[in-house]
Length: 426
Image (cartoon, rainbow, N blue to C red; front, side):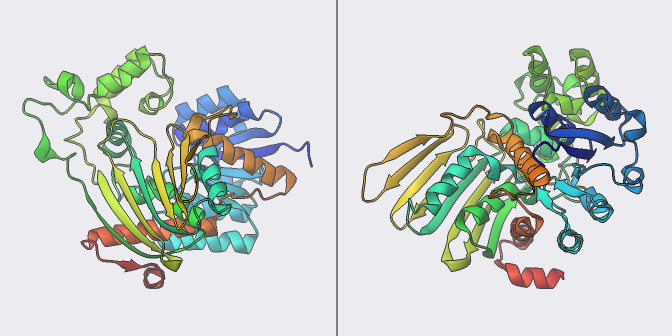
């Protein structure tokens, strides 16, 4: 089996599907092959044909048609918008495909549970894209904790600084701006983080409380003299959320990838300008139809009394998650963006680990995008289950916590017991 190539079909050929996961074929050319694709956008299918040499008969505008065909590959990459994951995951597993499933599994908890049950019934692996688990940064922290570097974990503080322009791009103008069309912000953006807390502590979440709101990106904060679109706006040059500045400056600086590649396929300055004139990414951030929060805090009580305080906030300039883990014999503090981890034992000298030393690839979520594909290839071609690889049953713990946090937030911060919450849904 050592020379086997993992074959894959991809359903949803957008930024995550095509640009991230399918592009890993270049990184693992002897181990991975994209053989078919489905997307409602014909221009994306043309790009898949061009970039991955997929024959016309294996290109589908309707993913249901792909799934009606005899099984074509080992794995189905499901990278559609959140609310379509269930629609394709169930028939794909029943057809015989293993799954690489973009997070979140689903914003509907009943659908999450049914996906997990179908995986068990069919014997399929469902690898959920919690890519942070596959980074050198978090794996080093996990190793330190497992080795007892801080004794028993008592409490964790963590921050996800979304970045002001990323919030505007993805969660105000972009695909994930409305919870009723995709997912609540705490699930879509932060199930990564909640999964990390479950993984690092080795504990399930017992109780959740949460506060947060959409405080700024709404019409009551429209600047005087502004327009519906940035290209027509008299105050655009002074606005930090200027769409022309964000996207056209990326183009002029030679970046044709994310986030510009989301605005239009094969971006040029002319194409992007036209897209800003007519499409969603050129809208004033105060005049969009967004409803997801722009800041939220979540408190978790884990099994055995471990407490976690997590903050997600749009209003930051640099990104890079931060984490501080406090234990009975020391503490660990890490900066994901800097790839630096500080260890402060109570009975010994402080020291620092530069996680980037000796690691060649930190692109794509700190190397996590490549890491999950590497582990998936090993799972499929060698039949081995790498340590830490995500599975849908484990992933659901983060989804329970996220959806319970959203319930708490909407109820004014009232605590939610996870197991009661699951019973109420079921």
